[in-house]
Length: 459
Ligand code: G3I
Image (cartoon, rainbow, N blue to C red; front, side, top):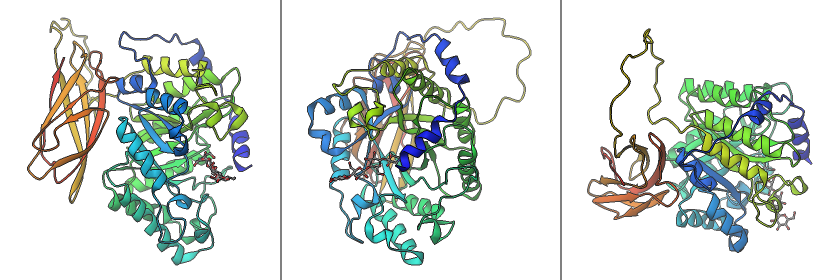
């Protein structure tokens, strides 16, 4: 019932400017357009994900779509507190581990959802308060993030901690009653437990500039100013029949604080506007260079918590809906993530246009850059591959790892070797890049990779 109220609240935010603009926009498909959501997102350096109920992984019709279309997964329920710590101090990771294995076998990254949430607390925690609860919740964060260390691209460290309505303040809960600093305490514990994961705050009814999203914005700004480790904000985006006209502007203002943004639980009420809203949300993400990916909250309509809303991209028979085409077109038409976004705006723009057009022939090849999240004994490497001006039909990135370092897990690429000289080849959906296009892959390892430099070869 609570969620029905949320949806009704969401649909009253009926500003249709962005949608109308989206509907009149001609969606062109580039020569390098992908033909699946995962390929098209990867071509633009992003992921496209789905929430998964792990029990469905043995259903062929479900898994066929999941593996074909998505390169990121999140557990719909299996990584929540009630599932992972059903009794205090007794941890259960069966469902979460199964999802991680599936992801690793199919070139998918994993979002972790959610370390702390006032709902789906196990019964023992619901009955706790004060310092006992504070210790229990921090222990939970530490244990779960440690268990999945190195396997999670981004964690929803805290979910839905802000209240609905006009105040922009925190939601009351037993977690909140342990002290207003509970959120930052959770982020600090998560960073220590898994230094390689991006740490996100995640919430709903934040689909535009409103009191609730502004409350969260102020918290993120405060965290950044005080060095509280936060890397990203998730916008659930459980949507009704309209979309706020400032949906993209809201994502952008968070990105401007220096955090990534992600669309984390997208689903949209069925009806005439469904395809348009899906397209508008996708375009908004593509237009914000720090919007790193989109996740739909399920695969087929019949998998959705929203039941008869038919809120997803595939019907119950697994057919692609109009909304699917709208998303795919928006991914293919959107800009890629720039490799090195400028940190400062140029101070002196040139007053005269250049008189000689560039004469350089197309650059055959590619460039790769790596960013490392390292901790004592391990690391996660995120590698960006940028095509030269001739584009690529495939690429291969090599590293020489220091002795003692070893690759244990790779996503969105195929590794050969695990120690010494290790090579990573594109997978079938991210080898073909247009001129200047960027894609991303990652690997995780033990030991230290500090100082490694990639070399990129294109074909
Ligand atoms: O697994 C039991 C089953 O054994 C039992 O017979 C049945 C009886 O009710 O319940 C089953 O558990 C249900 C579970 O989903 C798995 O289907 C829970 O009752 C039910 O509460 C739970 O609902 C989940 C909900 O979060 C909990 O609040 C939904 O699947 C899940 O989609 C939803 O996801 C949330 C995100 O985590 C946060 N944002 C909102 C989103 C939608 O509500």
